[in-house]
Image 1 (cartoon, rainbow, N blue to C red):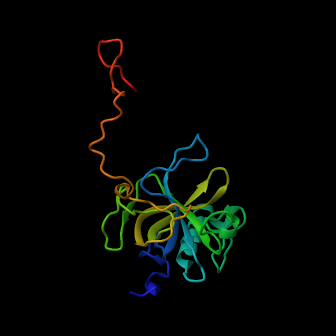
Image 2 (cartoon, rainbow, N blue to C red; image 1 turned 180 degrees about the vertical axis):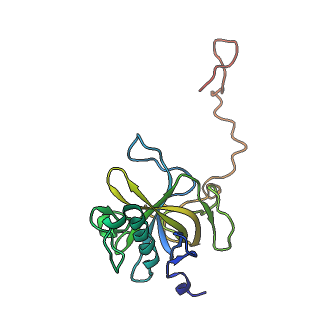
Image 3 (cartoon, rainbow, N blue to C red; image 1 turned 30 degrees about the vertical axis):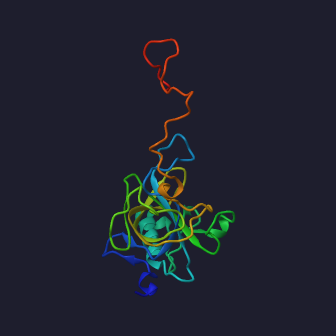
Length: 214
């Protein structure tokens, strides 16, 4: 199957929901809530989508972001044939050059998509990927997702994306230089371990019931 099938963002019907082109995942917190930088705020499930605009068409994503801004902010958003947002309206899309020290960002356009609800993650055969599956869904793998825009008007105005469902398409080199390794590949069976002779686990040397080690 040709990669061209996955190169273009596609709007789903007349809704604001979009099926993204293929992307590379970064900061993939899809099985657990991320830890927010601001401790007063709640974390969310999230993933950053790294998109190579030399290879993929993200026009549909830009269109829905622009339409969402027009709906939220009305005539304050001027007409733009290229669906650009005005400077006062924060765009969800960023240049990877803003993150020179981050793996995979060079030459990419990126945006973060998040949700309060755990997204469903499936593989290329549409089998669900769980948090303990190996190699699982991780930062550095290739995927596509369904997303939709929403407008915010607190601490500035702008557009962000919700993420709904994710399909992992292929493996990739994990970011951060550490690949996931199955525990069974790192450890032998240890059912015969009894501990050192002088180690009496849970014993109370003063007599009576064993003391808790917790």
